[in-house]
Length: 155
Image (cartoon, rainbow, N blue to C red; front, side, top):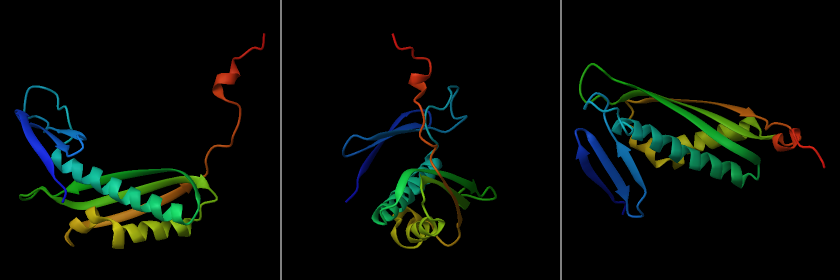
């Protein structure tokens, strides 16, 4: 069973941690005279979705033995404003996969498996939330001289 603790700090600031001590700070803009020092609690849902699907996509691509060098996911959500709760109406995920000769079809399939089968966080969203995905595959920069070597003089 998963378990986290959440403790009120002041104003609308809270800290949370898990059984291993990994922590997160939450805050709400405008709730105090100080600048917010943490993420808004609703944003943590986007963090969780990005992390969950990222783990899935990386795992699927790794099993295909592809030369993936990086995965970057931009997650954005639009909240409903008309009534409470101000839950997300739409969530967009854009994946940028960096790798050598990584087929688009493999990335598309990995994302599909994450969204329809593996990602537990995605499964928490109900049918009222429209989730869209897009992706791009980019080649890593060509190897070349190190920037450290550029100004070096042999003595």
